[in-house]
Length: 257
Image 1 (cartoon, helix red, strand yellow):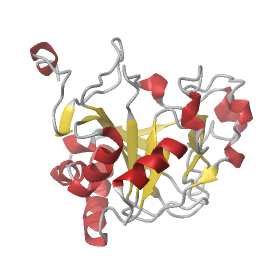
Image 2 (cartoon, rainbow, N blue to C red):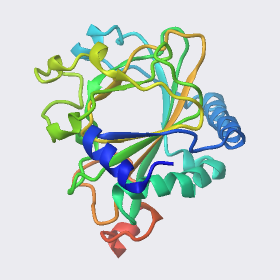
Image 3 (cartoon, helix red, strand yellow):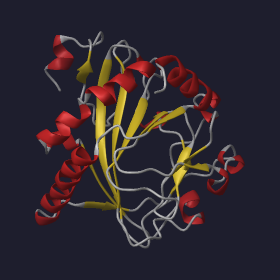
Image 4 (tube, rainbow, N blue to C red):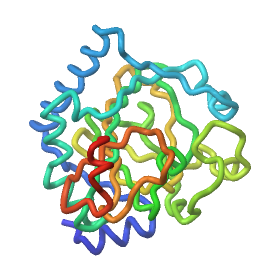
């Protein structure tokens, strides 16, 4: 078993840590049933957000006409998913990276369709929800297998050391990202139950899902308890304390959650 120190060292060196088998097979089968139930409910209500990302960079990798299904905050749909993001095994790993106080920013369901599921160009996440101390990390819970053919996540190890690189969250032209093509990134294939943690500075992206299987993941975005989101950000912000204490909450903020 990896030690806390080895996990910390890997994360500091690479900007990510890949944890295998965090959720057991019986747990992940239950989570997949709830995942599918969320998608069915959204479909019945005509509320399924099957999105396309445009822009010059996305067009270059053939992603302009492909699709992905997503929705925020699975814990608002399902108690099973609320329990999953409070899993001691998940939070023990997150604690080695963030420390004892862990705050949920949001979760997000992604279902990448078969045969032409949408790719993502290489990017950083910080510009979508910048935090004051830049402690923000993601934990991707793999609900299905994720092979390279299925469009698994690809990363550039150590790229988190670039810090807040300009124009790396959108699809506009970016000279920096021309140095980091999708094809050159490391493909991180996964099995159901694996969780990939990465810093929001880490350059990441994914290719098309060219397979005949849906790629299903839930992303859990978290930050340290002594950190907070910069003012003026409109992204969903759950502010749910998953472990420890929220040092930045106050009565006014709590009343708006």
